[in-house]
Image 1: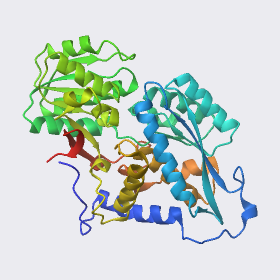
Image 2 (image 1 turned 90 degrees about the horizontal axis):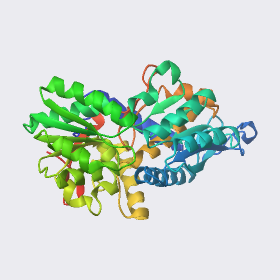
Image 3 (image 1 turned 180 degrees about the horizontal axis):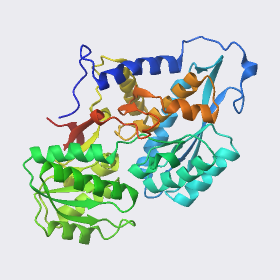
Length: 407
């Protein structure tokens, strides 16, 4: 089932996050009309701006996810800049420097270097693909600039001793796999095939799925890796179908997720499909994919269940308002979009707590963030830089072309 609403009378970890969100969201924005005490004390580039650099996949293979992040960042920055936000005795605004890395890791690394050195950004955000994120990781760590990754792959923040400036917003592979294994077991699926993307995201998925299915007593009959160039999915699907599985897991990101589903149906597979969170993008449900993914399951953070009508907490109100603005501007809403919005809010909160936009102080206060964001709950700590909370995850099913909470 989708993550249930929080009962405020019960003290749970998720309840603490929801309560902390009120502080984050209210104090990050500050009080309307509040003025800085001493504008001359700012050390920010261009005076009072908090400058965030973003290297995103606006074209190329990762565009299905990268464009969503650009939209989310622009909406959130505009909202924050209406009245600004307090940092020390200043009231700052946010400036975004967004670059298109073309889904190319080498270009992403060069952009991160230029943004950090030439544009003097305070922090970096981006990399919806694991490979582009990893390229930025090396630059951010070397130049000691906080980097909030939007990519999927556990190795982005590990080993921690070599990733002290790196944080990841997407769920951990192990948490997604365990929730997926519970779902598979509940569906009485006993034999599974796994189609996993090439690269770091797929590597994390293979390790996590094997462990989770073993614990659940579900047989993993075959693991097939998808090609990195997006071709040859038909032969990969045929290999998976050949072992006669009761269910197939597709572990990847859009557009690979939808393409793999279509290839499986083309190979004659008619059983249930199970997606990880990387599949949740408009592309997966669109066009030729629509029939192939109907009835498929996905494990994804709670933002997919957002309601524009019912709100009971500050976090839910923020989620509702973001979703409304996104729909108003772009016509449809994707659950992957809020990660970049949360990245900006986390950076604003860190700057407020640090009373500074200094990169080192931002890094130090990022690792104390415990809050409920739009995508889900985060709990960063000095020993944990992959902050999405496991109980932020819910199960969704494709019903008439949209992601619907499963019950």
